[in-house]
Amino acid sequence: MSAKAPPVNRHPGNQPPQPRPRHRACGLVIVLALSVYACDRPPPEPESSAVTIRDSAGIRIVENHAPVWDSADFWIVAPEPEFVLGHGAPGDSAHLVWNIRQAGVLSDGRVAMLSPGGDRKVLVFEPSGRLSAAFGRAGRGPGEFYYPLRLQVLPGDTIVVWDQGFGPVYHFDPSGKILRERRIDLGALHAATRTDDQRPGESVYHPLSDGSFLIEMYRPDWRPPEEPGVVYRSPRGYVRIDSTYSAHSFGWCRGTERLSVPDWSVPSQVPFPGRSVATAGGDPVAVHVTDGRDRYEVHQFSATGVLQRILRRTVDPVPVTDERFEAFMKLARTVNSHFDWPRWEREMRDRVSGRNHPFIIDLRVDSEGFLWVYNHGAGEWSVFNPEGRWLGTVELPPGGIHWIGEDFILLGKSDPDTHLESVMGHRLNRRGRW
View 1 (cartoon, rainbow, N blue to C red):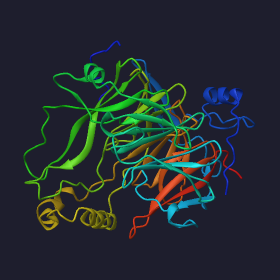
View 2: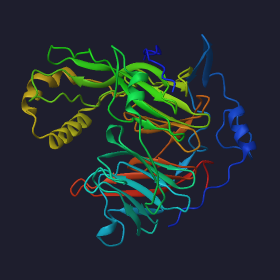
View 3: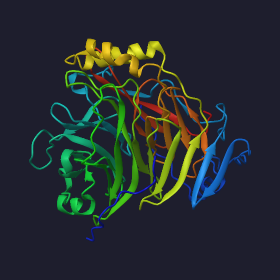
View 4: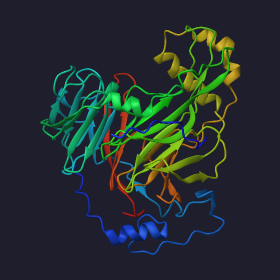
């Protein structure tokens, strides 16, 4: 991934416990000692064989060969959930949920979920499974959504919903009362980002807690290869738009892998594709970007676009097995049954077989500022501290991550037949012991 920035125009202009109070002294130890949690226990100094740190042109390169903590000492996620919301939870039909896009936990333990399909609502549940509030609906009026994409829970239990297409950004209290409506200035956004050789995406990619947000950037003149059966990746950039509509670039990388096809009847899916991913969080805010296909590497930037660190981890590639390949293709054919899959099989399958899994396919920053990196081939989440040190690997129960807090994690999974979803709250022990 190239760190070269795209040109931009600068525009002036059961009930989970309550969160424990954070201790500033402990936070200082964490930063200085490259540890995660040990206020009552001195962290070990990393062995020279475990990590290589060097500077190159002002950029710190952190090569991780082994974690700080072994699996017996590192963080533990309880295998059984403390509460289950939605499908499988007790109650009437009001508790059923589907198409949950994002979720977060309020200070009193309630869970807010964003359901962009159907009625397009925000749902607030008690941990008991009782529906506490439901607000929003499809429409263009106050408090209504066209297609809501992002949900945040800010301090003070303010629930923020970002709509598709740079639509209104609504701030709600947990009962659904509108606290604030924000309109994104599209003219200012385009003035800050649009040039002859780049265009902004059509929606907010990732909102930050201070109200700024990341957007994706595209090359308008770029075209995919014409020869059928070529695996390609289009250029992808990321830019942060701040409160003055100044644009801070994080460079260009490669987007999702696709397959050039002879016509639109043939699917362009690539089994286990590489893709670029960006996320942000922490205090101070750091932006993390990866394209994750060919090496285990994440670029860490300041909020203003300065490349500060390159995080790497020594890991072997994982080949795609025949069993995983068949499972992927079965799901793809089920979800996209309108495509000419027999033709894809005849013409394209041999060209995309024998591949390795991408090294990285997802990034998350938790509420405490630690970076979680997912390697699908190995099926593991690795955690890095803000200085880029690989702390250890977390074993999770089945399900996708919706939210990672200080001592709780929300996971979601869908019933393959009914498509109803469950959102589960699991205890997260950051000290590695109960």
